[in-house]
Length: 523
Ligand code: AHR
Image 1: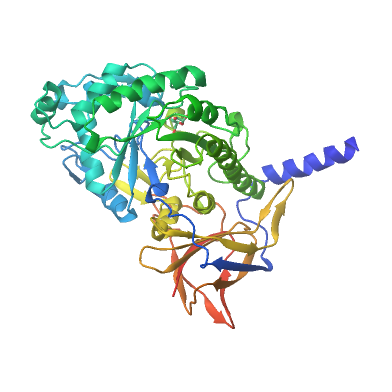
Image 2: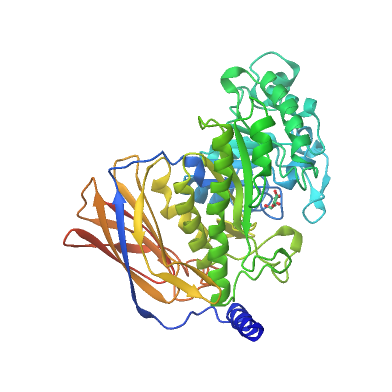
């Protein structure tokens, strides 16, 4: 028995550690049957499910977004033109800023007024590098306006005060003649801003103060009281409490029962590592098929975590008033050799795009409570949309996955029934194809298909109940290697190509390539 277990473990390990990112030769196509229940529409998928997270971390803001007006990198008022254009095209609905862990060590007053008079601090969480404060409140708000996004600001609970947070809200939103409102005007912004969401701290169980949920629930009530008091009712943001980060539901339980009536949403964080072991995460490139499948299976755990947290919320809040926001998610790999480990720079491959598609399909199923998710992070950090190198910029496979899924923003969820064989390797297994459908804001049915299997294409026969379609046209993202990626020398090595289905009897049939993400519009 013991020997069998050891042999099994050795097989699993050898599969996991094998070095080639090229999967084995193609097997015959997998037969997949999908039914889209257009007759049973569900909730609207909030556009904020496709939101982003941008922290003062590594080159996430400085270089990634902000290069300053004097830079030789083409910019408008200091914001790099290439990044702004790419993000506009992505239709980013909302950006969360300034952290992350950074938020609970950030003092907003240091980031306003003439830039040459702003104090230089140390970014204590991320590499202990100088933080010039050149990118502050006005720069963030201008940037969000430039890319057409709403804003979600995370306030400082860990090392700040109730007064500091209240003052920030008044500075941002007041239309009175108060000293704070006039200071904002003197700094160049006449009209008050609308702050859509405001977070009371970040990861308060860890970098945000190492608190217990009961202690934080009381603090949340206190902070939320003054956020409301210092903001005019017509510009009051939704107030977000910082919640948990794993399978446990304690934070949601305590916050939903004791967080008070000002609590609009509770956040949750979940990062995927290929190994599932934080200390030995696994590499961004050059990985084995074992690491491919383990990354996908670990990603899908979020489905259960959301379900168990929703159950607790349903008990405390049966009317569904409180949102569950996954305001940090994505792949987190071992440090990239040659890069400062504290900057969390990592490459991004086809695997990341497949992970993104899997996540989106899961988020859609939870659309009722999960009204916001923020990928970590937008530029140059973790599972980024964009990587920059001086004046050069590349779009990652994750960017392309977000781009494919744009029609799902604000679409109405349609349930699907799927019969698919399982993709198995070593100790891991999952359905070979993941599916999601929705009716977009223009009335078309959008279908998303993710093929998890890197070796086998799928023949997907799709039927619709309650609607008809005679064409299916869209795009697919795939490549021959599991770790296919764009680089500064080959910026378009992987990008979406045209993809369509054919009518066969009462079904639309798709030949879905191995290891791919596709989105098609059915008409
Ligand atoms: O996204 C990087 C870090 O991950 C964030 O600062 C923190 O909230 C989380 O632990």
